[in-house]
Length: 575
Image (cartoon, rainbow, N blue to C red; front, top):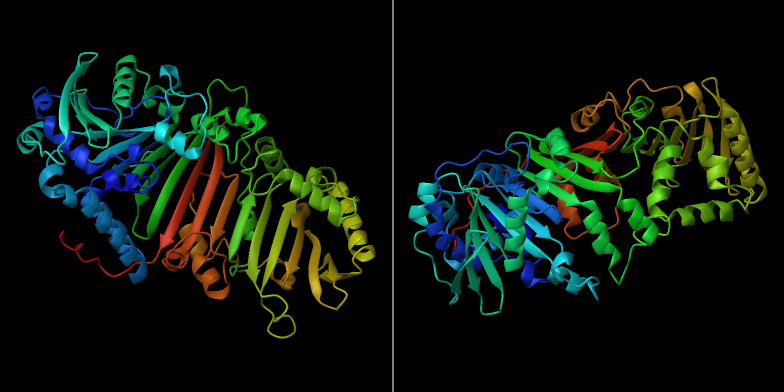
């Protein structure tokens, strides 16, 4: 269907008309490209492991996304969710179809489907500093307008393209201009609002459309000089790691270019130190596929080939789910909390975009302990093993039911148990002397534990030790007897966990699981985005598995299990 070609553009239309490749112009250019199509004889095949157009889009593209044109895949997407979520998606798709196709006199099945390939790629190019673009931007809006767009449409049937597009549809009085650049013919239109859209045929198989004549030249230069995404450092090596047959979508984010643009923002600029660290990273890419039970995303990130930084290949997670009960609502685990903290500090120090600045956490620990505990020295220094943060529902039905509805459970394998025990003892003293908590030791299933009882007699927290030097801290509802001794029905053996959590990559350095359906049903959640309730009602669970592939790259696998709705009816006919 045509919607994949333009759905990404619609969200940008209100803020930056220059970025939006409207179908009124794109359609016109597709039509007038008929002369160039006579040159199409036999094309060169490009690796299916890379997005279409990867050998055309310039290396300095800020973002690129390839979307399927297979109508059956979009039909499959529409089959997920509840009646409400299906209705919201259909409303959005119809709006895009009518705005960009129907209102401009085009029908996808008649005018585009006969010749277009299985996917199309849309890329956003950053301002070209080499050709006089401003080196600094005064506002986010100006930065956005300086960006340009390139759309690559593969041609699977040249003869159909020639016959169908022989007569251009002259919409809105567009004026056509012919020009040549580097021996390649270009059809260019000047819209009434002053925009210039261009169309050209490259490699005898690709129709390239841009919203800026300079962007067309940049694409041609990149193609001829082999300075495209396909030759970007690490791109061709890492993208095949996440390749899949007939994906629904693929995307790529140029991290250093994105960081540079963020650094010029007057609202929340990135500090020079953070920018320097982000320059070590090169790309973030992903492949999205539709499965029978939901949506899967395979992702990969990699370092800049010129960076001196390397990754520690340490995949030691994957055991904590065997210590948690099956009723656990959420679990986040990792292989080395101390190392994770160090990496976080490296890129988050003085970074206004960090969710929680490291300085805030450090000062918070000092404040709560009256400067008796240091986060790095007294706590994180001995947390060098696997850890997990989880949420469990309350199991008490009497006294504690009204106090806490859930428990926060933290587990970590100590890399230095004597230091850990000394730090925990100091923490007990702080809770007793500064906050007047009762510190009450007890034994649970032959394991020592300590309860923190608030001044009003409410059990607030429990900490202790499990096997293999694993320390635990429970805050909220008293669920100690659910983890001590180790449960028979574990989270790892539960059906939702096994169904949702990706089994690859394996071994892993981190996992995340969230039972969305049960969480939403039992706990109110803060509103983070529009239509949140509709989206959550359509989702059953989310699972993420990550691993360090090698010293230069990380792998991720995400699965979102969705509810299945009624068979979707055909979209309303255009009016």
